[in-house]
Image 1 (spheres, rainbow, N blue to C red):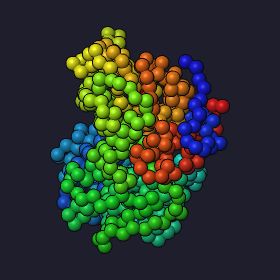
Image 2: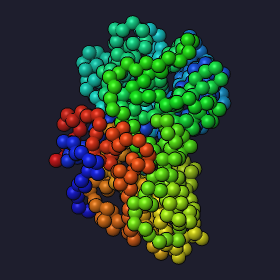
Image 3: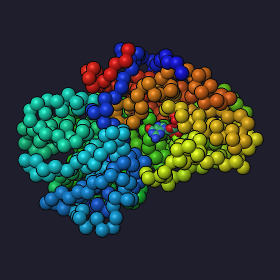
Image 4: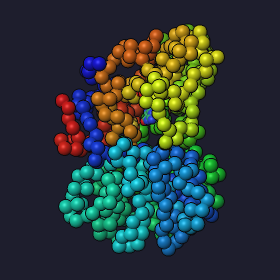
Length: 488
Ligand code: 5GP
Ligand code: SF4
Ligand code: MG
């Protein structure tokens, strides 16, 4: 394989576009997460468990719940899946009418119980628990300053930086202390914070990650995605706005906007891949956006006659329905995904080749044999899974395989909370579409354009972060050589 770097698909190029970045293992501890909070409800910790269960797709490595009984915060945080961690007997240890929860995925090496959330701490005013979705870009610098000042950290998550800043704040109220600390951090944060008496939800001024407000009986709910409201029969009220802080206590719900306003930069990848299609995020339906992405893709790609449209399940199911109806090609289920792969699954070392893809996907020969296929996927990251899938489809009898992607090529890593690999590993960073087509061994390959993506999702291009598709990072990150390796 040879390497050169694609041009940006965005209109402007920043000075950083031509560089290669590598996340430092230590500090760029990526938090792909789901967060949830409830205030003033019966069985708050059980509702939080259900909410986290609905948000499990946002992070599968660790999960936790912190609850407040009005006087004390109780917490349980463990490695593993939500349904494995919380057995019926643990809820007695999580009493109270308010709670927050978190499920987390992290990159290898940083996955450990000490980084699992919510982080619960005691400080001069009492206790607090915090759950964070997103990544701060100046956490390392702040941490160095705090450590030089005597702070002792117990984890490597950037969330702990917020807690240390908060504990050092000289402001009078908890709310002001939190605002004071968040004014010092830069980057992506959607947070739920629980004190003995209050639940606070807050979103950074760019609104990288989603957070919504719901109503449950006489109480309130906050969640990354509204699928977590549906499971507990909560009513969706609205999305938390960019830079908004929601304070929920015995006086009801109050909103403030304490930060300097910024042009919103909502993560467009949430619509493409990350969120569940049955959710509303940033006030919009994910299903509607995903279907429109598929329809737009069908419009943009040159007409290709095929026997059927098949999605790579499950992430491309919705886009494929849009593609099928726009192109007038029948929708078929040609690949089945196994959802029950456990952590302890034992892979044979030699006996079965390409085993990785086989664990997850199996072809439906009845549909594929002797057929020309339009295969829809949401994205290509490294290209390795896609290549294996093509091979699998051919073996099942497919004649022609036309690959269709409902987003532009991923050319840059994310520093705001999605675990994309380094630039060197992203096939879209170093190869043209024609070269990727050859690597996948498909008859044709077509990606959606950046403009088509925005048109499908709706709204203005300037209101979305699209850095992984173009390298135009809306919030500058630390470029100190020891923290971020420059490769040219
Ligand atoms: P590749 O062919 O690049 O190895 O894999 C492509 C698949 O990766 C697509 O089906 C896409 O849905 C999936 N994908 C995209 N982003 C992510 C991500 O952040 N995490 C995981 N696990 N899969 C992803
Ligand atoms: Fe989302 Fe990509 Fe921006 Fe990260 S870089 S916030 S994944 S759009
Ligand atoms: Mg997928």
